[in-house]
Amino acid sequence: MLVPDTSPIITAPPERPLRLAIFGSTGSIGASALDIVRQFPQHFKVVALVAGSNSAKLNEQIQEFKPRLAALATPEAASRLDTSGIACEVYSGEAAAAEIAAHPDVDTVLAAIVGSAGLRSTLRAIEAGKTVALANKESLVAAGALVAKAQAISRAQLLPVDSEHSAIFQSLHGQRRCDVAELILTASGGPFLHTPKEDLCSITPAQAVKHPRWSMGAKISIDSATLVNKALELIEAHWLFAVPQSAIRVQVHPQSIVHSLVAYTDGTQMAQLSVPDMKGAIAYALRFPHGRLPEVMRPLCLSQVGKLEFFEVDNERFPAISLARQALDAGGAMPALFNIANEEAVAAFCQGQLRFDRIVPLIESVLSRLGQQSYTNLDELLAIQQRGRDAARELL
Ligand code: NAD
Ligand code: MG
Image (tube, rainbow, N blue to C red; front, top):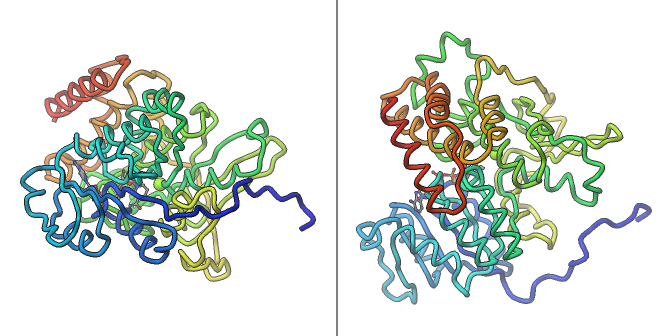
């Protein structure tokens, strides 16, 4: 090689398989992660599986992966788990997930619970010094300051799973941080990229969950349709890479091939490209710093893709990103309120109680009703979140 080798110093494979706790194992990210474990049993051993209420699916996963620990969100759901013949301890509740996150048999937690339900366990994993492969962006959006504080003490490694942040992480590799000018998040634009503003009022949940490029859980699909997902990702990028919101740009890229970019001070941009498949980002995080695993995704053929387009965001039709910038600038619990109000709004939209085009205005109303609030610990943050939920429900 003529150019300097910028590969990480640690190149030897670990001596034993990485002991994985998969949180949100029955979901879209969880299923992709288990595919990777199936493909590379020499590298990964599942020691814990945690999910919400899908006991049938978790039962299948327990039979196949034989974890030592399993948990569901409620005792009622956990009572439907069958671990006969398997040395698997069953737990239930949010406290159980947090306990498993800190368990001595766990090396890495894949945090892929959806929404604020993942907050406590993600934070606990960081506090316990575990490596956290983070899909659950909502926990960083809500509690970025607490996560940063905990990580400064425990030195836990936080690795992005969100495809955009993985792309940025990969595009920063081997570069000097002082040479970075800007981060550029790409956004597919969702299913309503070209829908006129006046038609956004009549969109149904069934239309909103149909993402044109990615196959994902329901909540993130709706977040992608409102561009709230990109708003959350902007806040996520701010915390992950310690970059002010003013230095994070968003560009619409409907083909979802360029997963994000880093702009450098000399005018160069570095990007990461692949077919839209979360397995690439999941495998990169789970394997870090040991490089890439072979054949986790279909190879990309750019001549088959044909064209790659990039547009500016239409902030008038999709005001979520501007609102997230304001929330970050206001600081304190504003991003947490943004996130919790969105959760309530999406739930109401799914139940037919809120129009699609009222989701972001509802978030804005919650933010202006409650105003800037500060917190110093998780309990205070959870209390503020509860006030945010209550305000959203009242406004609904
Ligand atoms: P999903 O709806 O498919 O799965 C969610 C998982 O969380 C399920 O296993 C569910 O049982 C579990 N869960 C829900 N409530 C729970 C609770 N109270 N306690 C324990 N477990 C609970 O969602 P997903 O698409 O896999 O997304 C998961 C997370 O990853 C989200 O934060 C999402 O934003 C993020 N993410 C997803 C994708 C993707 O392609 N799906 C991409 C980037 C980031
Ligand atoms: Mg993403």
